[in-house]
Length: 500
Ligand code: SF4
Image (cartoon, rainbow, N blue to C red; front, side):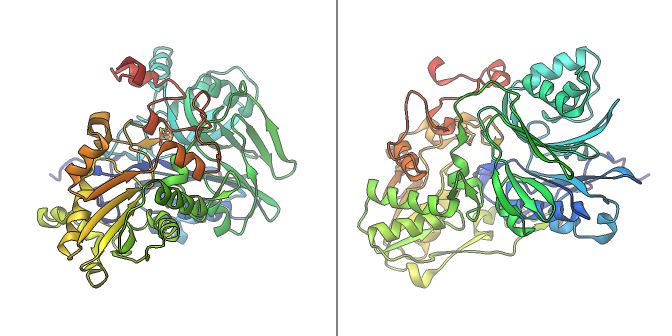
């Protein structure tokens, strides 16, 4: 008899060569969302949008569309958008002029063991019709909500925190879907950018602090919502504006955009790490080019932590704009001392232990001819556990560098994120247990400097730096000051900064 398999699980988990780092030594944005209304073959637009947002989640993706003659249709798949949502046979099952989609890394729930039931968009059938939702962020009171909903009879289909929204909508007594969403989201704490759809309406919402991004675009006679502006470019949409923190927009092809304010206004706290790392450099955030902000981080870093050296090298790809800024400000030549293999991708072939042990060498290689004999400044976006940084330093020294200096384009990451970014537990974060000098010794580099929090704020356009009494951004992973109480984590024993 063949072995029994769980139909909700993938047949084999793909080994992601693109994601190769040492022991999960990187931060992952967990989701990208996209929706469109008022265009023919809306699902094709969504597939292209999700493809542009693939950096926000590579584990799985899904699309829901609606057409009057077929009703709601849904497809959820593991793997990259390009490997699934380019197949004509699949896209033909997603007709209609309205559609939404989601790419995920893995949100709260079955981390690393995603079941297809955890892949969004989620769908609910209500008395007034169906609705699908896709969520980017993390609900920080999901455990309590889930317990309450299950006690009152809700039957959950997934392990995802996002499913709470559908069940809260089902329990609302409001007469239409947008009003039910308002009801549901008022019960939710944490970070959420949501795109949702009914048969005729595309809905977008950002949490009151606006932690995660969401933008509005115009495409032909239709409208679209996206996590980032780079996904508007790919479908030829025009950027209209960002959805404001705490705003809900209800969009129909006939009436356009209606704006609602369901939440009590609060000072915004957008995720500052979107500027540093998560968003694509060709996106625009808060009216600023992400590329230009990262370049400016490099400029600030060179002013704060100068070093006499022969070469400035980025750790590709995310360290590149900051390295360009550092080189420009310091006057030290810039060079591609590390080359990234662009063609790794995913495979279902299980790699041997020997290949796994190659770790970061599978993805990055040193440009020996450039490095040899030089005092090298390496610019990277962040240090998480430090294992990848150590390997890179060894590769640079093996190639004959005379000195290795690390310059990091973010402050020390000493606290986990509970708002939709996958970070290791606090004790696994290098900066949570070591001082800067201890980290330098641990990494075995000649010098190590991080940009200061004020320097980072200046680079994102806050000329006076961080306002300590009312910070302009969420920077909890650096400061330990969480703008929304992480209720579920506190219940599990997590200790906030003041309680340490
Ligand atoms: S904790 Fe860090 S990664 Fe998470 S939302 Fe805040 S700034 Fe962004």
